[in-house]
Amino acid sequence: MHYPLLLATVLSLTGCQTVPDRPAPAAKPAIAVKPAVDAKPGTGTAQTTMPIMDWLKPAEPSDLPGWQADNIKTAWSAFMQSCRPLHHQAAWQTVCAAAGQLAEPDSEAIRAFFRQHFKVYRVEQPDGAVEGLITGYYEPLLRGSREMTPKYRYPLYAPPDDLLVVDLSSLYPELKNLRLRGRLEGKKVVPYFTRDEIEAGKAPVRGKEIAWIDDPVELFFLQVQGSGRIQLEDGGMIRVGYADQNGHPYKSIGKWLVDQGEMTLDQASMEGIKDWARKNPERLPELLAANQSYVFFRELTNRGGGPLGALGVPLTPERSIAIDPRAMPLGAPVWLATTQPNSTEPLNRLVLAQDTGGAIRGNVRADFFWGFGDPAGKQAGAMKQKGRMWLFLPNDYPLTLPNKPANGSGDKNGP
View (spheres, helix red, strand yellow):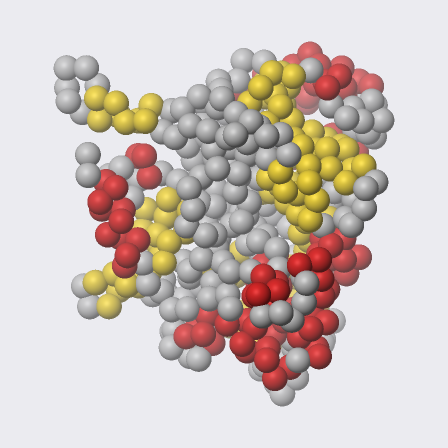
Protein backbone atom coordinates (compact mmCIF):
# COMPACT_ATOMS: atom_id res chain seq x y z
CA MET A 1 0.00 0.00 0.00
CA HIS A 2 1.11 3.55 -0.68
CA TYR A 3 -0.65 5.42 2.11
CA PRO A 4 2.65 6.68 3.65
CA LEU A 5 3.29 8.60 0.44
CA LEU A 6 -0.25 9.98 0.43
CA LEU A 7 0.08 10.96 4.07
CA ALA A 8 3.37 12.74 3.42
CA THR A 9 1.75 14.63 0.55
CA VAL A 10 -1.24 15.71 2.63
CA LEU A 11 0.95 16.71 5.56
CA SER A 12 2.93 18.95 3.24
CA LEU A 13 -0.28 20.76 2.33
CA THR A 14 -2.07 21.05 5.64
CA GLY A 15 -1.51 21.72 9.27
CA CYS A 16 -2.13 18.36 10.91
CA GLN A 17 -3.54 17.18 14.18
CA THR A 18 -3.51 13.71 15.62
CA VAL A 19 -6.56 12.66 17.56
CA PRO A 20 -7.60 13.95 20.02
CA ASP A 21 -8.36 17.05 17.99
CA ARG A 22 -6.11 19.54 19.70
CA PRO A 23 -2.70 21.15 19.01
CA ALA A 24 0.12 18.65 19.20
CA PRO A 25 3.53 18.32 17.61
CA ALA A 26 3.64 15.91 14.68
CA ALA A 27 5.61 13.21 16.44
CA LYS A 28 5.71 9.43 16.49
CA PRO A 29 3.30 7.91 19.02
CA ALA A 30 5.12 6.99 22.20
CA ILE A 31 3.75 3.44 22.26
CA ALA A 32 5.41 0.10 21.99
CA VAL A 33 3.57 -1.41 19.03
CA LYS A 34 2.01 0.09 15.93
CA PRO A 35 -0.92 -1.25 13.89
CA ALA A 36 0.15 -3.78 11.29
CA VAL A 37 -1.33 -4.24 7.83
CA ASP A 38 -1.77 -7.87 6.78
CA ALA A 39 -3.01 -9.42 3.58
CA LYS A 40 -6.13 -11.49 4.09
CA PRO A 41 -5.33 -15.02 2.80
CA GLY A 42 -6.64 -15.70 -0.66
CA THR A 43 -7.86 -12.17 -1.32
CA GLY A 44 -4.84 -9.90 -1.51
CA THR A 45 -6.92 -7.39 0.47
CA ALA A 46 -5.17 -5.50 3.26
CA GLN A 47 -6.75 -5.53 6.69
CA THR A 48 -5.79 -3.91 9.98
CA THR A 49 -4.42 -6.06 12.79
CA MET A 50 -4.85 -4.43 16.17
CA PRO A 51 -1.60 -4.42 18.19
CA ILE A 52 -1.24 -6.00 21.59
CA MET A 53 -0.84 -3.47 24.41
CA ASP A 54 2.47 -4.96 25.51
CA TRP A 55 3.44 -1.85 27.47
CA LEU A 56 1.08 -3.13 30.18
CA LYS A 57 2.70 -5.48 32.71
CA PRO A 58 0.62 -7.54 35.19
CA ALA A 59 0.66 -6.20 38.74
CA GLU A 60 -1.27 -6.52 42.01
CA PRO A 61 -3.15 -3.94 44.09
CA SER A 62 -0.53 -4.45 46.79
CA ASP A 63 2.03 -2.99 44.35
CA LEU A 64 0.25 0.37 44.32
CA PRO A 65 1.81 3.04 46.57
CA GLY A 66 -0.81 4.24 49.05
CA TRP A 67 -3.49 1.76 47.93
CA GLN A 68 -4.80 1.26 51.48
CA ALA A 69 -4.46 4.92 52.49
CA ASP A 70 -6.46 6.55 49.67
CA ASN A 71 -9.98 7.71 50.50
CA ILE A 72 -11.06 5.82 47.42
CA LYS A 73 -14.72 6.50 48.12
CA THR A 74 -14.29 10.03 46.73
CA ALA A 75 -13.38 8.47 43.35
CA TRP A 76 -16.45 6.23 43.20
CA SER A 77 -18.79 8.86 41.72
CA ALA A 78 -16.20 9.60 39.02
CA PHE A 79 -16.01 5.88 38.24
CA MET A 80 -19.79 5.71 37.95
CA GLN A 81 -19.64 8.68 35.57
CA SER A 82 -17.25 6.64 33.39
CA CYS A 83 -19.74 3.78 33.38
CA ARG A 84 -22.39 5.95 31.73
CA PRO A 85 -20.77 5.67 28.27
CA LEU A 86 -18.72 2.53 28.99
CA HIS A 87 -21.61 0.24 29.85
CA HIS A 88 -22.52 0.16 26.15
CA GLN A 89 -19.18 -1.57 25.43
CA ALA A 90 -19.15 -5.36 25.81
CA ALA A 91 -15.89 -5.40 27.80
CA TRP A 92 -17.35 -3.07 30.45
CA GLN A 93 -20.93 -4.27 30.73
CA THR A 94 -20.40 -6.79 33.54
CA VAL A 95 -18.22 -4.47 35.61
CA CYS A 96 -20.51 -1.47 35.30
CA ALA A 97 -23.61 -3.56 36.01
CA ALA A 98 -21.98 -4.92 39.17
CA ALA A 99 -20.98 -1.40 40.24
CA GLY A 100 -24.56 -0.24 39.85
CA GLN A 101 -25.63 -2.84 42.42
CA LEU A 102 -23.47 -1.30 45.16
CA ALA A 103 -25.39 1.19 47.28
CA GLU A 104 -23.06 3.86 48.70
CA PRO A 105 -20.09 1.53 49.26
CA ASP A 106 -17.35 2.52 51.70
CA SER A 107 -13.67 2.52 50.78
CA GLU A 108 -13.08 -1.09 51.83
CA ALA A 109 -16.05 -2.30 49.77
CA ILE A 110 -14.76 -0.37 46.77
CA ARG A 111 -11.27 -1.86 47.14
CA ALA A 112 -12.83 -5.33 47.33
CA PHE A 113 -14.86 -4.55 44.20
CA PHE A 114 -11.75 -3.62 42.26
CA ARG A 115 -9.87 -6.70 43.44
CA GLN A 116 -12.75 -8.92 42.30
CA HIS A 117 -13.60 -7.37 38.94
CA PHE A 118 -10.32 -5.90 37.64
CA LYS A 119 -6.80 -6.85 36.73
CA VAL A 120 -4.04 -4.34 37.43
CA TYR A 121 -1.30 -3.49 34.93
CA ARG A 122 1.82 -1.40 35.42
CA VAL A 123 2.18 1.05 32.54
CA GLU A 124 5.65 1.24 30.99
CA GLN A 125 7.38 3.43 28.45
CA PRO A 126 8.60 1.84 25.18
CA ASP A 127 12.07 1.49 26.71
CA GLY A 128 10.71 -0.19 29.84
CA ALA A 129 10.97 2.90 32.07
CA VAL A 130 8.10 3.28 34.55
CA GLU A 131 8.25 7.04 35.21
CA GLY A 132 6.72 9.78 33.10
CA LEU A 133 5.55 13.38 33.23
CA ILE A 134 2.48 14.44 35.22
CA THR A 135 1.17 17.96 34.64
CA GLY A 136 -2.01 19.74 35.73
CA TYR A 137 -4.92 21.64 34.20
CA TYR A 138 -8.06 23.39 35.40
CA GLU A 139 -11.19 25.28 34.39
CA PRO A 140 -10.41 29.02 34.43
CA LEU A 141 -12.74 31.95 35.13
CA LEU A 142 -12.47 34.90 32.73
CA ARG A 143 -14.18 38.31 32.54
CA GLY A 144 -16.06 39.13 29.38
CA SER A 145 -18.96 40.64 27.49
CA ARG A 146 -21.35 39.61 24.74
CA GLU A 147 -20.47 42.86 22.97
CA MET A 148 -17.15 44.41 22.08
CA THR A 149 -16.31 47.41 24.27
CA PRO A 150 -13.13 49.38 24.98
CA LYS A 151 -12.60 47.10 28.01
CA TYR A 152 -13.62 43.83 26.36
CA ARG A 153 -11.94 43.72 22.96
CA TYR A 154 -10.34 40.26 22.56
CA PRO A 155 -12.72 37.86 20.76
CA LEU A 156 -13.35 34.24 21.60
CA TYR A 157 -14.44 32.51 18.40
CA ALA A 158 -16.57 29.57 17.36
CA PRO A 159 -15.14 27.51 14.45
CA PRO A 160 -15.16 29.32 11.08
CA ASP A 161 -17.18 27.84 8.25
CA ASP A 162 -14.19 27.31 5.95
CA LEU A 163 -12.24 25.10 8.38
CA LEU A 164 -11.90 21.61 6.86
CA VAL A 165 -11.32 18.44 8.84
CA VAL A 166 -9.95 15.66 6.64
CA ASP A 167 -10.55 12.13 7.94
CA LEU A 168 -8.66 9.50 5.92
CA SER A 169 -9.83 6.50 7.93
CA SER A 170 -12.55 5.51 5.44
CA LEU A 171 -9.82 4.83 2.89
CA TYR A 172 -7.03 3.83 5.24
CA PRO A 173 -8.15 2.35 8.59
CA GLU A 174 -4.52 2.51 9.70
CA LEU A 175 -4.92 6.30 9.84
CA LYS A 176 -8.04 6.26 12.04
CA ASN A 177 -6.25 8.22 14.75
CA LEU A 178 -5.16 10.99 12.37
CA ARG A 179 -7.19 13.98 11.26
CA LEU A 180 -5.92 16.83 9.15
CA ARG A 181 -7.10 20.42 9.09
CA GLY A 182 -6.94 22.96 6.33
CA ARG A 183 -9.01 25.07 3.94
CA LEU A 184 -9.75 25.16 0.25
CA GLU A 185 -7.95 27.58 -2.02
CA GLY A 186 -9.51 26.95 -5.38
CA LYS A 187 -9.31 23.16 -5.69
CA LYS A 188 -6.27 22.86 -3.49
CA VAL A 189 -6.21 22.05 0.23
CA VAL A 190 -3.83 24.39 2.02
CA PRO A 191 -2.94 24.88 5.70
CA TYR A 192 -5.50 26.79 7.72
CA PHE A 193 -4.70 30.32 8.87
CA THR A 194 -2.18 30.71 11.68
CA ARG A 195 -2.80 32.52 14.96
CA ASP A 196 -1.25 35.69 13.52
CA GLU A 197 -3.44 35.50 10.43
CA ILE A 198 -6.61 34.82 12.41
CA GLU A 199 -5.95 37.72 14.75
CA ALA A 200 -5.12 39.96 11.76
CA GLY A 201 -8.58 39.29 10.31
CA LYS A 202 -7.59 37.05 7.39
CA ALA A 203 -9.84 34.16 8.48
CA PRO A 204 -13.63 34.49 8.03
CA VAL A 205 -14.34 34.66 11.76
CA ARG A 206 -16.44 37.83 11.84
CA GLY A 207 -19.81 36.93 13.30
CA LYS A 208 -18.36 33.88 15.05
CA GLU A 209 -17.65 35.75 18.29
CA ILE A 210 -19.06 33.98 21.36
CA ALA A 211 -17.80 36.66 23.74
CA TRP A 212 -15.19 39.37 24.13
CA ILE A 213 -12.54 39.04 26.85
CA ASP A 214 -10.65 41.75 28.75
CA ASP A 215 -7.23 40.06 28.87
CA PRO A 216 -5.43 38.43 25.89
CA VAL A 217 -3.17 36.38 28.17
CA GLU A 218 -6.14 34.88 30.02
CA LEU A 219 -7.73 34.16 26.64
CA PHE A 220 -4.56 32.39 25.52
CA PHE A 221 -4.54 30.19 28.62
CA LEU A 222 -8.22 29.43 28.09
CA GLN A 223 -7.15 27.96 24.76
CA VAL A 224 -4.50 25.92 26.55
CA GLN A 225 -6.98 24.58 29.11
CA GLY A 226 -9.69 24.03 26.51
CA SER A 227 -12.69 24.88 28.68
CA GLY A 228 -13.71 27.61 31.08
CA ARG A 229 -16.35 30.03 32.32
CA ILE A 230 -16.80 33.69 31.45
CA GLN A 231 -18.28 36.06 34.02
CA LEU A 232 -20.35 38.76 32.30
CA GLU A 233 -20.72 42.28 33.66
CA ASP A 234 -24.50 41.85 33.92
CA GLY A 235 -24.00 38.95 36.31
CA GLY A 236 -24.52 36.21 33.76
CA MET A 237 -22.12 33.34 33.17
CA ILE A 238 -21.07 31.66 29.90
CA ARG A 239 -19.54 28.22 29.87
CA VAL A 240 -17.40 27.27 26.87
CA GLY A 241 -15.58 24.16 25.72
CA TYR A 242 -13.21 23.10 22.99
CA ALA A 243 -14.80 22.88 19.53
CA ASP A 244 -11.92 22.71 17.04
CA GLN A 245 -8.40 23.86 16.23
CA ASN A 246 -6.59 25.35 13.24
CA GLY A 247 -4.28 22.36 12.72
CA HIS A 248 -0.98 24.06 13.48
CA PRO A 249 1.23 22.33 16.07
CA TYR A 250 1.25 23.69 19.58
CA LYS A 251 4.42 25.51 20.65
CA SER A 252 5.16 26.26 24.28
CA ILE A 253 5.42 29.99 25.03
CA GLY A 254 7.17 29.07 28.27
CA LYS A 255 9.92 27.37 26.29
CA TRP A 256 10.10 30.42 24.02
CA LEU A 257 10.69 32.65 27.04
CA VAL A 258 13.40 30.29 28.29
CA ASP A 259 15.05 30.20 24.85
CA GLN A 260 14.97 34.02 24.77
CA GLY A 261 16.74 34.14 28.13
CA GLU A 262 13.76 35.86 29.76
CA MET A 263 13.40 33.26 32.53
CA THR A 264 14.76 29.96 33.69
CA LEU A 265 12.97 26.66 33.12
CA ASP A 266 11.78 26.44 36.71
CA GLN A 267 10.25 29.93 36.41
CA ALA A 268 8.26 29.07 33.27
CA SER A 269 5.02 28.24 35.04
CA MET A 270 1.65 29.71 34.12
CA GLU A 271 1.93 32.29 36.90
CA GLY A 272 5.49 33.12 35.88
CA ILE A 273 4.42 33.69 32.28
CA LYS A 274 1.48 35.89 33.31
CA ASP A 275 3.77 37.95 35.52
CA TRP A 276 6.25 38.41 32.63
CA ALA A 277 3.38 39.48 30.33
CA ARG A 278 2.19 42.11 32.85
CA LYS A 279 5.71 43.55 33.04
CA ASN A 280 6.32 43.43 29.26
CA PRO A 281 3.04 44.42 27.56
CA GLU A 282 4.85 45.76 24.50
CA ARG A 283 6.26 42.26 23.80
CA LEU A 284 3.00 40.40 24.34
CA PRO A 285 2.19 40.01 20.60
CA GLU A 286 5.67 38.55 20.06
CA LEU A 287 5.16 36.10 22.92
CA LEU A 288 1.75 34.84 21.77
CA ALA A 289 2.94 34.58 18.17
CA ALA A 290 5.44 31.94 19.30
CA ASN A 291 2.47 29.55 19.28
CA GLN A 292 0.63 29.59 15.94
CA SER A 293 -1.92 27.03 17.10
CA TYR A 294 -5.39 28.48 17.66
CA VAL A 295 -8.41 26.93 19.42
CA PHE A 296 -12.07 27.58 18.64
CA PHE A 297 -14.85 27.09 21.19
CA ARG A 298 -18.51 26.22 21.54
CA GLU A 299 -20.92 27.48 24.13
CA LEU A 300 -22.07 24.85 26.60
CA THR A 301 -25.06 24.55 28.87
CA ASN A 302 -24.21 26.39 32.06
CA ARG A 303 -24.89 23.53 34.45
CA GLY A 304 -23.25 22.38 37.63
CA GLY A 305 -20.28 20.04 37.80
CA GLY A 306 -16.99 20.05 35.98
CA PRO A 307 -16.37 20.61 32.26
CA LEU A 308 -17.02 17.76 29.85
CA GLY A 309 -13.97 15.69 29.02
CA ALA A 310 -13.24 13.55 25.97
CA LEU A 311 -15.34 10.73 27.42
CA GLY A 312 -18.38 13.01 27.36
CA VAL A 313 -18.87 13.09 31.14
CA PRO A 314 -18.16 15.91 33.62
CA LEU A 315 -14.64 15.92 35.02
CA THR A 316 -14.22 15.43 38.76
CA PRO A 317 -11.68 17.71 40.50
CA GLU A 318 -8.60 15.78 41.63
CA ARG A 319 -10.05 12.49 40.36
CA SER A 320 -10.03 12.96 36.57
CA ILE A 321 -6.99 12.89 34.31
CA ALA A 322 -6.25 13.38 30.63
CA ILE A 323 -4.33 10.56 28.97
CA ASP A 324 -3.10 9.43 25.56
CA PRO A 325 -5.94 7.24 24.20
CA ARG A 326 -3.40 5.36 22.08
CA ALA A 327 -1.86 4.01 25.27
CA MET A 328 -4.93 3.24 27.40
CA PRO A 329 -8.70 3.26 26.94
CA LEU A 330 -10.75 6.29 27.86
CA GLY A 331 -12.87 5.81 30.96
CA ALA A 332 -10.59 3.32 32.67
CA PRO A 333 -9.57 3.65 36.33
CA VAL A 334 -5.90 4.48 36.81
CA TRP A 335 -3.73 4.44 39.91
CA LEU A 336 -1.57 7.56 39.88
CA ALA A 337 1.57 7.79 42.02
CA THR A 338 3.16 11.22 41.87
CA THR A 339 3.80 14.22 44.13
CA GLN A 340 2.07 17.50 44.91
CA PRO A 341 3.08 20.49 42.72
CA ASN A 342 6.58 21.75 43.52
CA SER A 343 6.77 19.28 46.39
CA THR A 344 7.95 15.84 47.43
CA GLU A 345 4.70 15.19 49.30
CA PRO A 346 3.12 12.04 47.80
CA LEU A 347 -0.03 12.30 45.71
CA ASN A 348 -1.18 8.68 45.36
CA ARG A 349 -4.79 8.01 44.41
CA LEU A 350 -7.31 6.38 42.13
CA VAL A 351 -8.20 8.59 39.15
CA LEU A 352 -10.27 8.11 36.00
CA ALA A 353 -8.96 8.50 32.45
CA GLN A 354 -11.78 10.76 31.27
CA ASP A 355 -10.05 13.29 29.03
CA THR A 356 -7.35 13.77 26.40
CA GLY A 357 -5.02 16.60 25.41
CA GLY A 358 -2.89 17.73 22.51
CA ALA A 359 0.42 17.36 24.38
CA ILE A 360 -0.60 14.30 26.38
CA ARG A 361 1.48 11.89 24.38
CA GLY A 362 3.01 8.70 25.67
CA ASN A 363 2.25 5.74 27.88
CA VAL A 364 3.20 7.14 31.29
CA ARG A 365 1.81 10.63 30.76
CA ALA A 366 -1.14 12.34 32.41
CA ASP A 367 -2.68 15.75 33.01
CA PHE A 368 -4.30 16.00 36.45
CA PHE A 369 -7.56 17.98 36.63
CA TRP A 370 -7.51 20.30 39.65
CA GLY A 371 -10.97 21.87 39.31
CA PHE A 372 -12.32 25.38 38.80
CA GLY A 373 -11.01 28.87 39.52
CA ASP A 374 -7.82 30.55 40.67
CA PRO A 375 -6.83 28.13 43.50
CA ALA A 376 -7.05 25.21 41.08
CA GLY A 377 -5.18 27.28 38.50
CA LYS A 378 -2.25 27.87 40.84
CA GLN A 379 -1.94 24.15 41.52
CA ALA A 380 -2.27 23.27 37.84
CA GLY A 381 0.21 25.91 36.70
CA ALA A 382 2.86 24.69 39.14
CA MET A 383 2.48 20.96 38.47
CA LYS A 384 5.26 19.32 36.50
CA GLN A 385 6.08 16.17 38.43
CA LYS A 386 7.45 12.72 37.79
CA GLY A 387 4.95 9.94 38.24
CA ARG A 388 4.01 6.31 37.71
CA MET A 389 0.72 4.83 36.54
CA TRP A 390 -1.13 1.54 36.88
CA LEU A 391 -4.16 0.72 34.73
CA PHE A 392 -7.26 -1.18 35.91
CA LEU A 393 -9.03 -3.22 33.24
CA PRO A 394 -11.96 -5.65 33.56
CA ASN A 395 -10.85 -9.26 34.01
CA ASP A 396 -11.76 -10.28 30.44
CA TYR A 397 -10.72 -7.04 28.74
CA PRO A 398 -8.96 -7.66 25.37
CA LEU A 399 -5.49 -6.16 25.47
CA THR A 400 -5.59 -4.55 22.05
CA LEU A 401 -5.01 -0.92 21.23
CA PRO A 402 -8.09 1.34 21.19
CA ASN A 403 -8.70 2.43 17.61
CA LYS A 404 -11.24 5.19 18.09
CA PRO A 405 -10.73 8.95 17.93
CA ALA A 406 -11.88 11.05 20.85
CA ASN A 407 -12.57 14.74 21.32
CA GLY A 408 -11.36 16.18 24.57
CA SER A 409 -12.04 19.40 26.37
CA GLY A 410 -8.95 21.33 25.41
CA ASP A 411 -5.28 21.64 24.61
CA LYS A 412 -3.86 20.90 28.02
CA ASN A 413 -0.40 21.43 26.66
CA GLY A 414 1.00 23.46 29.51
CA PRO A 415 2.60 26.90 29.19
